[in-house]
Length: 306
Length: 299
Image 1 (cartoon, chains in turn green, red):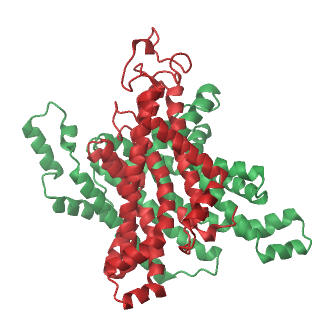
Image 2: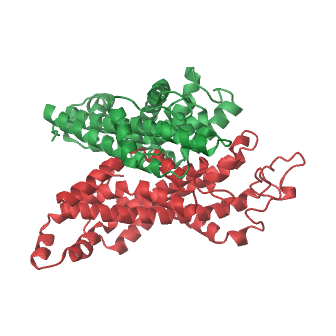
Image 3: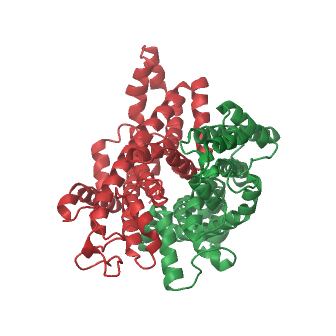
């Protein structure tokens, strides 16, 4: 176990190193000049040159990357070009909002997805099953920005049940969480349905039924725990999809998280922030995958970590 | 997360195309999906004949006296946008954008994914290691963030957007085909071919690739749905297909500030995106059931 963990952590570190290299290189190729953004339109050629030297942007790629990397291993993400602040501080300040949104979204997708999947599996082949599965297809096919705007229009603009945007109370959290959760609930309901159907076919369920146990007890005590656990382990893998989704959803709802930070930085070519958010997201994805793999053997002892 | 549905075993070639097609046509949802795709394709091709307006024509009578867009109904069936252009016309021409990008980007992604997957799966060794580690690396990228960065780097045009999407979307295919190729490569008939002196290229393309065709078809169909959604999202953020070329995403991008007063400008193109993505998902899912024997009897 310890050896496995160490090997996986080394792999994760190498992947993050690769992500940093690729992102840094892509941003190095950027034709939009960050120095122009900082200096403003009226700056003289001399000022532009000074800023370029000050930021070390006149150095060759390898030197720039090495500098960034040596800062990174000491926990230094560099300074924002435009916000005159440490990137780490900016990200740290925005992280709680994004984590809150993620928690809300995971609750939504599990609640919706698992319920739909269980009901569909229990009524397999019925009209209910079919309409639930079509709903799940619509969920995975709907563009998140359209879902977001639709929820905003119906529940905020028309009905006035929730605020139009912003951050702070529970009511602010509902619509963005739902927007992010609908996509995932489509996937979860389909997986939950097929997992539940598989479990219901097993001999131990037949035995439980044959013993004369009540249907409710068979479903909730014998079938559900076995069907649900492998699905729960998928949450770790979800994180990658969330990380993309929050850029869109935070911009639609004006949610002050790292997605919005990244989007503003991309528009203003604030390279250190883009680098920072990409690395934090990659880190979350890698850890999520690792977590999913680590949890699996506890759920199913037949699977051993290799 | 879609990996949960990766078929473990390959459907053998005896899953004859004829019976697969008839089984596909027997599925109601697949038929609905195919009908929606056909509708979109016809709308895109015959757009100039279906509507009397030009997609970029700003019409005087397309706006109210106060300069507001016209709601659906009346002379303009879907209403008009902020610049007084006919929305139905823009949606019809926008279908061209979605379909071109869907097919081009996804075709390229499929090609890259297939080449990486089967090369890594067949050669193993350091070639395979390097390729698969790179694939792992790509998996760790938040795909949308990467696409946004890439789209911001290049000046976005239709083909650049397609290229960006392909560069992000090949990863899943590569992973799936890698797994299948590794198991195929150890089978007896491949070893037999090798002893008979078949060259590597011959084994890869004559003996391994044909076994992967069902998987490629399934992932290719589902991939178009992902591609359509990604293009719409990039265009919605303003870094995809650039106006005035209409795309469903950029119609929403152009009009979203006004969406409380003119919701049709967001929800009609939104419905078009949903419909096309849903259609390819329905067909792709049916294809998976039909082509993959391990999935049979699940519904």
